[in-house]
Length: 421
Image (cartoon, rainbow, N blue to C red; front, side):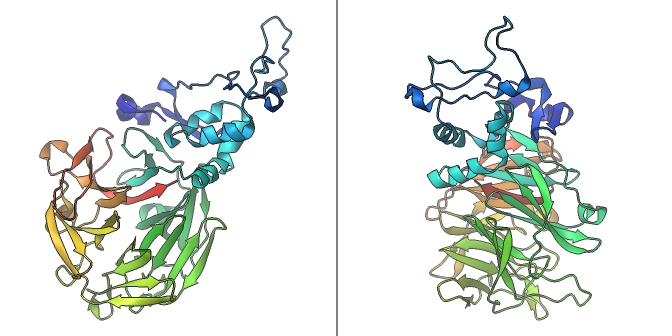
């Protein structure tokens, strides 16, 4: 993946190699490995294994052009195991280059084995997946927003493409839920294969639901079904990317739609929303040890979600809950012991432009991430991207500007999810 100055010219220059399933930008392609290159280390010759697999190409190594295989007896190569450990520590933004090393590296990348190794050695990094207004494809960004790549076009029908969608991540899967002509469906993007697949559907397909991610597991709760009755749900489910399946959880205390979810204190929380009784100011969390939900009264009593506003904009950093108040652009932190909120100051984007819709407010490692229309009129209609490491005690906020129009995407964010893999 490319970095820096080429980002504004990406849309004209980029291409997609169907053979390797890799997005590349042709004007600046510069892989670090040639087809005959290999990495060498002073280990015993008994572990000598060729990196290159050019013997299948039919090239004659005795044609006077020099050897075509990197099989030099004086330089023993890495074992496959050590080789894989090295590749696993590459930045994910550089993985596309492995597609061009040899067939084994391509197979290693597409099999998902590298991500399993990363998980085993505790080597993970976040990526931001975003779908902006006016775009036909999702975009994936690295943590610093220095590089990006366009995902393959999601092969849904027109109803899904033009309708409202919700997204969440679990492991190396990006799940996008929406409505097709035949009903509610989920499309799954597989990071390793760089492909979209339909399913698996939820046990109770829904929209306008709360969601949260913890490690490789994703949780959903509430929302409403696709039937003409517009039934509001109190059901909840958990997604396991290892086997691509959903499992039911106990029912919540309250039916709710247009609610928000988060994971904190080793618990899945759902907060806000509305049902047939009106706006909900209570929250609740799922206690996995007791396998039941516990109610938290008046969790939003100071800031109930108003009609036509977005669900609560929430993010958890260092096990502290933060909220972006759409009506005032204020950042707040939740005081757990007092069941109340403390204002910290204004955010540098305009969440009030569209009553909270079109703004991304996420946790990005130990930082808050906010994306939307900039408070600076010079930014025009392009998105502004900021991060901040909040201090809940001092209330000090130092927002760092990562991008303000350089990537030329609309400031209205339809969907945004953070994947850690």
